[in-house]
Image (cartoon, rainbow, N blue to C red; front, side, top):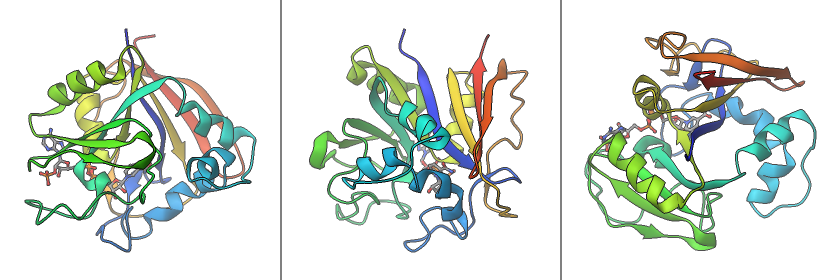
Length: 215
Ligand SMILES: NC(=O)c1ccc[n+]([C@@H]2O[C@H](COP(=O)([O-])OP(=O)(O)OC[C@H]3O[C@@H](n4cnc5c(N)ncnc54)[C@H](OP(=O)(O)O)[C@@H]3O)[C@@H](O)[C@H]2O)c1
């Protein structure tokens, strides 16, 4: 049975997965880019953007897991970009340039319909307007037996957590405080939903924890 997996989702020490006031200059909200410092430094991240170098070690090992046996992605519309409301045109194609790191089908949850966007490197963005279960069904079909990665953002992950659909979730706790923004676990009773921490390891840049459902 394919799994729904979250990988490398970064939160601050005070629990935020994004800072406030996302805009074109602040994809992760104000101050939020620091959440991903541990990831930017890794060899896996550099390679995904066609660059050499990057660090190996604990952070890289965890980052690399996020690209293993993944056949499709699901993300929320705010992770895809800063455009809100009905799409004014087709010009916004994500933050990631012509060759996004996904290299497969990406299902974007939104209330505003839009035609699919084919990008370089195998990534296609499909826009799903009929909810999380429909996105899951489409991603499962597209993944063809492989797992599905739930990329974020916070609201999207919370919906799938509450629905009990996430099998495994790697969070990276970065040593920063944000004070406000999008809080990952507020209002979510993870033990009651059947999750427990099955793995944890620290690097100089982050503390990594894996939450697993039903074990
Ligand atoms: N810390 C990390 O590792 C990490 C990872 C990924 C993203 N992020 C950050 O998280 C922030 C985005 O998180 P977020 O919580 O604001 O938003 P999000 O989960 O990315 O997207 C929320 C939006 O997606 C659409 N949507 C979500 N669920 C839907 C549903 N069931 N049916 C229809 N539409 C649905 C709605 O947009 P519309 O109604 O406008 O269509 C909703 O406002 C960004 O700053 C991003 O960079 C952080």
